[in-house]
Every structure is written in structure tokens, then in C-alpha cells.
Length: 273
Ligand SMILES: [Zn+2]
Image (tube, rainbow, N blue to C red; front, top):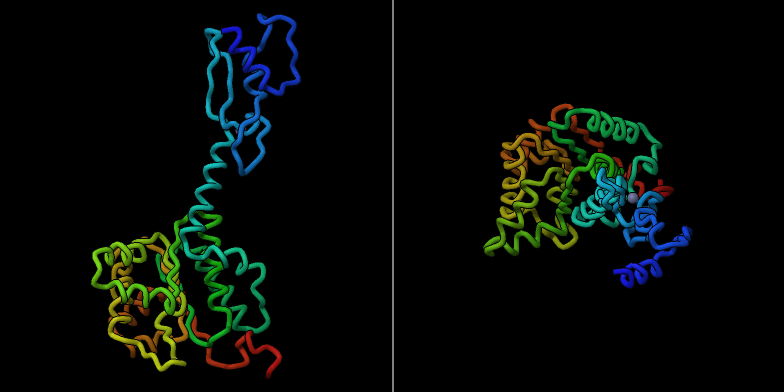
């Protein structure tokens, strides 16, 4: 026993030196031993995640260190970011760096803040002009929900993700795939019904089916948070498909904004006009 403990003590960088074996304060020694938990630096447990103490019978006992709560919270947040699909942009498109130059940007930010201060039972919808900051403002809202409010987020980038879903429509795992978007605590659909118009693609029945399947589920299951952006106005979506458009129209009441089409609002063309 003594040999084992001597060996253990040698591995412990401790400032405490003991003359006699009997004098060793094991709790102090254990607590001084550094651990390998990452994410933050804790003086109490020296990053072991546990703290030793003497119980009422003078036996050595241990408990979880208080830092473990915030370590777990941080780890969950990192997992949420990685699984959201927004890993690369969530820290780039924030409220702080949303450039407000015109009235429409003031209105966009005001609507986003009002939405975040609401019970979020309505859907948030930004439609209209390309390059007006719709994706930026929606990402900022999603970032607030994910990073500061602990919500699970799924990101559906229409032009990238929907062809992938359509290709799997007859596969066994299709329901599982689309189910992630249907049931996500927060769903952000970016560029709803966006197609590759350069290549002459049009909105197909397959697109409409996917939009309906996801949005009808979320329409029926209240309590799920839904954020949408599209080049189309809600009115235009009603023309594409009445069932999809009317659900968006109904659920986005009071939280719907159309940025009037005006090429000068396209930040990608700043300086050209
Ligand atoms: Zn600790």
C-alpha cells in the first residue's frame, strides 16, 4: 500500500511537502493533481472535473466539480453548432455586423428583434430582393437561438439540400432524413424554392411536395420555431402552390417582411449604382 501511494505521490506535482507519511493530507494532494478536461481552466478541480473532500467519518470522498455544468453546456453548444449545418457562418453573420444603411435594413433588424422577444409561435419570413441581407439576418436570429438560448437548430439550404432529399425519396431512410427537418426544434429554410435558373431549372412537383411535407408538419405541430427566407414573396409562393403559401401566410402574420425588388438593395453590387 505504502509503495503504491509513494508512487502516486511522485506523480503529483504538489507544493505541499510532508515529513511523515501519516501527515499526508491526501485530499489536498488529490485536489492538486492536474486533470485533462478541456474548454476552460478551473482552479478548484485543476481540470479533473472532481473535487475530493473528507466525509463525516474522515474517509476520502469526491463529488463533481461545479465547473462541469458549464463544460457540459459548452460541449452541447459545440455539438449543436456542428449538427446545425451552419458551422461555417454562424459566427460570421451576427446582429453586430449586420450593416444598416437603408430603411429596409432597419426594418429587417427590428423585425428580427421583435421575433426574438416574442413567444416565437409565429413563423419569421423574409422575402424579396436578392442580396438584401435576408440570409444574414436569419443566420443572426438562428445564432441567438443556438448560442444563447440553447436551442437545437437544423438548416435547410434549399438549392443544396433539396436535390439531395429528392434523390432519396424512394430510399428506406428518406423518412428519417426529412424527419430531421420536420421535427427540428428550430428550422431555418434558406432560399425556399430557389432553383438553378441559370440552367433553366423550374420549381417542380417534387420541390412542392418536400416544402409541403416539412411545413405542413410544422404547421400542425405548434411549438416548433420556423424561420424562412426566399426570393419569392409570400404572394408569389401562393401562386406556386396555394397549400404551402397559405400556411406560410397564416403562420407568419405580423412577422413577415417583403423587401421590395430594387437592385440598389443588393449589397453584392454596392458601388455600381
Ligand atoms: Zn472544476
